[in-house]
Length: 115
Length: 128
Image (cartoon, rainbow over all chains, first blue to last red; front, side):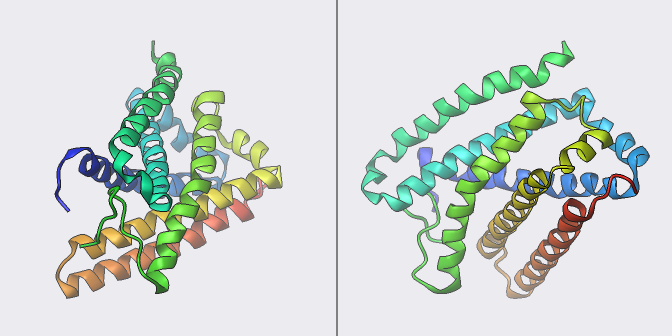
């Protein structure tokens, strides 16, 4: 289990980002549920998401979902094509590269209103 | 502790419900890749949190296809997320009594959020 290296780092990050996204999902179901109680209360609560602290949090959420999605593809590819398992490290670097490519412009767009 | 495959994923279980759970994580994962990243792109890149309010939700959910999209995202994400949590409980909560308590909590939360979330997405009427 604790073999160190990129495989273990990828696995630990997968669990942590999964937990974080699940926690946000539960909060998000509750805040969206407020639409059933009318416009006034819903608008009052969801405006919190425009607060600078929350905007930074949303960028964190974007990062967590992106990493979890890309590393999830890597896991699935390796599960169904075991002959690629010698290349797991290269695949992990591919995940990191694709992550940076997608995350940096997203973060820029999301944080732009702050500046 | 769950056995790992060569890649650091959970090793493929040999059969039974655990095999279906393992397969579900991979199939729902691929669907969620489109649904969840699509949702983030729509809400945070195409629109932004500055635009999201009651009228925005009412306008979106006037179209039943968006309700279907959101309901699929809701249910797949919940079952995927809570099944992941269940695997983590199996891995880290070693004492039988505590493990049982944690699993009951996981199942109860799954049930509650599936019902409550579906109610929100499927029964919302903007006029009310």
